[in-house]
Image (cartoon, rainbow, N blue to C red; front, side):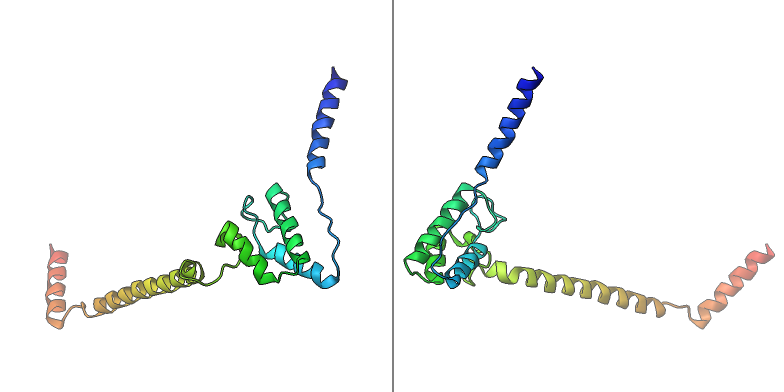
Length: 158
């Protein structure tokens, strides 16, 4: 029974290795290899969402790498390949989406939040400064001090 269980565990662990295939492509020159590497690192895997095509082992990433290799072989330039991928999978497939009306919030949203936070902090600090300066003007007048002193002296006597 132990041998059978060990064989099953070994068999299941080997199937995981069999699925982790490595793509091998023959490029005409080193410039084409560099373009392939650049494109696969610039484009995001639609399934993994947080990995580029070069790092992803998802089947869709393998298909997209194969498609990029095919288009490079056809002589298409990088922009044509990126445009094809964006048309097919949307702006999400790019790690650095183009600046358009749809993506303006992605580019300037963090900056707007930072500026807004600085403005809010400035308003809060300004209000606190004004209230502390207002407390200085709330000190007792000479007449009020004299009255307070007489009241305190009266309490001492009692």
